[in-house]
Length: 77
Length: 220
Image (cartoon, rainbow over all chains, first blue to last red; front, top):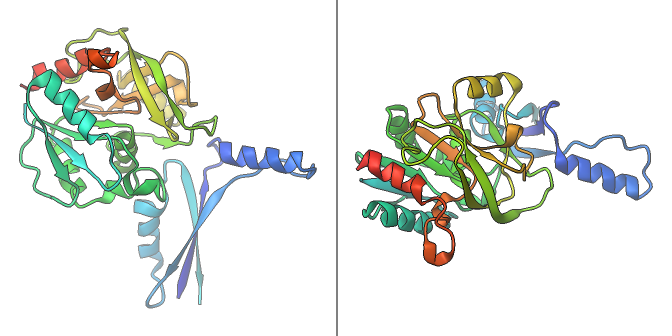
C-alpha cells in the first residue's frame, strides 16, 4: 500500500512562491491564471494496508506543520 | 555558567555561539552532538544557527525530532533557559515550545546583512543588562525568517510581553516586525538574528555584548 500525503499552506497564509509562479505564468501569456499556491507531495511506501490514525500522527508530528499547513492523505493500492 | 550548544548535522554557527558565550561569561560551553542524549544539568542550552538536515522538509523540522531534543524539551519545560537562534529558532517553533512558524521571506531572497533590533520584552534571563527600547545592530542570515502567528496568538504575545525583539525595518515580512519571541515564562527565547556575531569589537560590532553579558550575570 502507498500513502500519498498532499501538504499545502493554509488559505490564510501568504504564499510568496505561489505568487512568483502566478506572476511568471502571467508574464508568459497565461492570462487565465488568477492565483497559484505551491505545496508538496510526499509518497510513503507502506508495508501493510496503512493505518489512517498512524498516518495522521505522522502528518501532525512531522510531515506537516499544523500551524501553517493543511494536509490530505490519499491511500492507493 | 555551564552551557551546552547542541550541534546538528548542518549546524554552522555553533563555534561563533561558543566563542560569544566564552567571551562574555569566561566559560567555554560544551558542544554536544545531537545523538548524545545525556545533557546533564546545564544552566543554559543553545540551539545554534545553520542548515540542519539541509533544510529538508521544513527548516528545523527534522532536527526538532533529533534524539537529543526529547531531553532539551524536557529541561526547557522544567525551566532551564533555552536560547534558539536562526535555524535553532526554526527548530524551536517546530517543537511548539513557542508559538508560530517561520515561512519563506516575502521577498523570496536570502537576506544576509546587519539589521537594527529593538528590545521590547524585558524582565527575562536574557535581558538583565539591557533596557526596554534599546536598539542593537545584529546580523541576519536567513531565507525563512518570516515569523507568522494568527491574530489571537499575536494578541496573546503582546498582552503577555512575549515579543522580545522587533526589527526596526521589516526585512522579511514577519508579523508585527517580530524578530524574537519568548515562551510564556520567558525562560525560552527564539530569534532569527545572530547576536553571537555582534560580540567582538575587533570584528567591528559588539552591539550584542550586553545581551550575552546579561545572560552570564544571571546564570553565573
